[in-house]
Amino acid sequence: MSDSMAARLYPDMATTAAPAASPAPTPEPAPTPDPSQTVAPVSEVARMAATILPEHDLYDGHVNLMEAPASPADIFIEIPAALRTDSPQQAVELQATRAAMAGVGLGATAAREMWEHVARTASRPTNTNTTTAETARAALEAVWGSQTDARLAVAKEAYRDYAARDPNGAAVIDRLGLGNDPKFIMKIAAMASRIKARG
Image 1 (tube, rainbow, N blue to C red):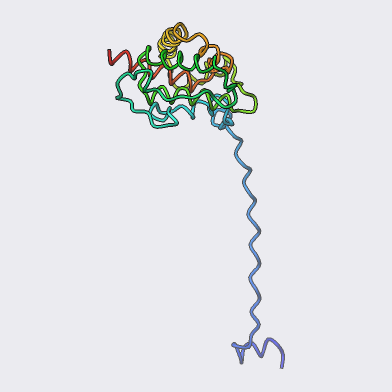
Image 2 (image 1 turned 45 degrees about the horizontal axis):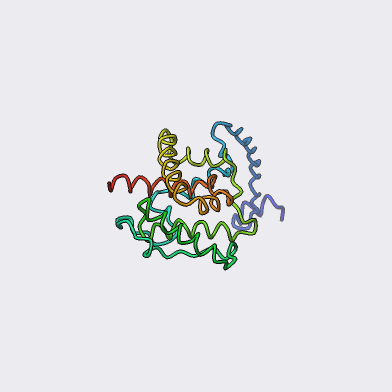
């Protein structure tokens, strides 16, 4: 029996030809990136700015923002281990630091927070803050914007007051490079602003 006759008599046995495969679609070319929309890698400035936002996250310890000024006896700070010599002179200098912190109007927890920042910096392998002045300024501008100069002026005024009361403590802070540490600068500015507001 021929194939054509079999197909007429027994249609279920007819061989159905497979449909021809559709040609694969041609992939569209990838769009050309718009340079204005390209996300830049996180810079050192952005990273540093992110560590000092918002203001209530400035503090690594437990600062009572409403506390009254402390007396020197209420300020519990120690010479950073990396700087300790256990000399009688250091004990005298530590007392001067406590008196200076109380003199500028810091509360007990604020003073401890500031000095612990000093101690953490001293304990780094380099024993110093390695941020440049330019990077620190840019990080502060990223947070403070147009208020940068005004807030820096507040911080500088407060630091000058402290340094006049405690030259040795200020020398330690300067030697550690904390004048270029944006988080330390912001702590000084924030605390100084609250002291001024407190009157």
